[in-house]
Length: 380
Image (cartoon, rainbow, N blue to C red):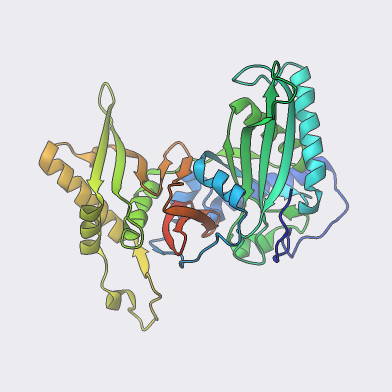
């Protein structure tokens, strides 16, 4: 059931209902929009590298526990999500979510009847799909509300009174999106460029297929690059004073035969002291007379110096140069991010909320009282 909230459940303000054009024409425009979104919002590793900014400002602290449904928040926090990018959706309407639920349920049932939908845990008797809005996640009037998709089912031989269980979850989000790009879109396209999924791959494939047929969009894999993971190392460490990250764990791979995987764990306080030693002086940040906001900016040079310090420390102890390898995973007590495009936010007792932010998607992990860290950072 959709939750009532003071904010309007919305498609962006610049979106209006228009007569549907031919599918081929709208599909071509949507596909072209994919290229624009990738280059402007940093949705693909190759194109992101072309527009790497050298500085990022940490998002302001804010609490969203009173704005987001607790059940939805719990699901978002406890689950590891596989990320994909999505091109703009043609004539997607937040007011039609109940209809979409019925249509996707029927689509999955039809595919199952043809033998195409086989659950990984065994045959399922039926599937029930629900679309809902995750209110409280938007940052600007141009952002479309986040949409949560859930698929419930029960095993073929389950008792009649057995409840259906959640077998797949996914969401579409655009939070604090690039305003220039959003305003450049045709009014009959909705931008929800980030897709997260959790569950059997066959259901993920079916959901993507239905969206592509219904809204003339394209999906693509979204990896978290080596550079993005290094940003995360710095961003998480930068939040240690507000929320104890407990540890900084990195997984590296070295190009040897056979491949060598190294797990490098640093004490949280040691990581913080190293990070503090490479940070700019506030007066240096305000060069040019600009006012410095609380938290300041994090410069790419600082990130590189921090990473080099970590590598040097490892080399002194083990005589292995991590610069020859690739960073594959970063984790702290607040969450984890993997090169393969998987993210997870911690749901321990002290940290209970999160927010989507910064260009296409910056997932921030918060405490009850205050935002404490950036979980995921796509656009540079």
